[in-house]
Length: 430
Image 1 (cartoon, rainbow, N blue to C red):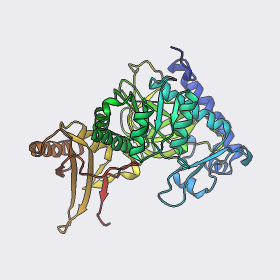
Image 2 (cartoon, one colour; image 1 turned 30 degrees about the vertical axis):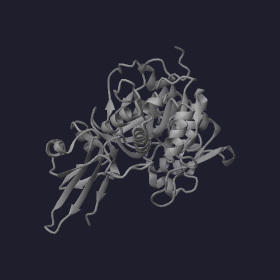
Image 3 (cartoon, one colour; image 1 turned 90 degrees about the vertical axis):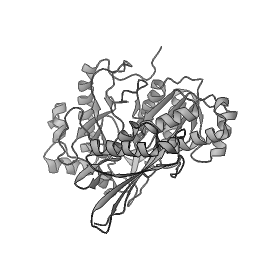
Image 4 (cartoon, helix red, strand yellow; image 1 turned 45 degrees about the vertical axis):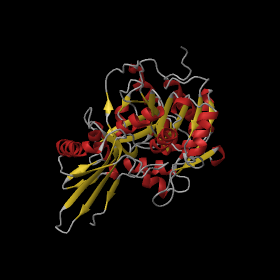
């Protein structure tokens, strides 16, 4: 089969050379055209000519989300404003939004990355892609839609929410692929199940993005929608947007597009590389981004690298699913807890559903307490609750080294969202 969006290198041995050339271009481009980067590099005592190999990456200073907010409205700008053809923005939950600029080349590169995702997921030009994500300043809608058009499949830009419209389109247009957040995917899957229309659909695949996804949630979506394949697509606005990698069909990790950016995994406290297989913060350096290049950008997302050859045969490297964020870490009785660790425990408990909430509170005795509220799966009866609660509490104790109280709830008890679902609630005062 002809691969239309292949890697830019032929073997893993060629990747360091490609990345070194891209790194040198990025550093030179940023130094010449961005006052922010030039000041940072001069303060660190490094100039473009000092970057001779990949080992010199560690000499470069870090970039953070605070730098993007401080540089509002056009942070990291490294081209003349006349070359900017589009802007996108983060959600802006704290302070000013992070606005990122794009040249036409940036857009073209992003769409090639996204089209590669569709190709890797096994889509064809006969597919009909229903895009149930937000449009506007957020990168998701534009990325999923224009990526589908670049690939050559039919795009159905239905947007988020409006479950009645979504189900109508699934039936009338015989959609074959759904793209959405994991939370929206669960909402839609439960609606399809409630209406009893699964067997009338033509769905084959689901592509989930924008939030961490667990094995339990994937299993629920797959079962209720009757699809065989569910993919996880990573990405963030600062690094173009979604479409910068895709989970492998063998479920052996997420292949990331190392021909477009360098990914470091660093200890969030020491900022030193973590050992192979250890969890670290994802730090990005782009290799050809013009308008707002990234140099060692601290994403705060946490994952681990996966080594070795992939059974699917793809030569692009892999990382695990996003396990959480370093700034979402909860300190409970001296132990660092990430939401992804709770996901991993629940995924090994038979009968546990995909939805949970972790509550942290300080009681009158002055001690901190963790209460884990977990839905049981739809087909699991009330009689299994006690055994399930004991197994979950034991798993948390064994894997996270903390004790918790577990409450098992009926399926559908916890709130659903078309966007990102909140799972951690910390009411302790400090």
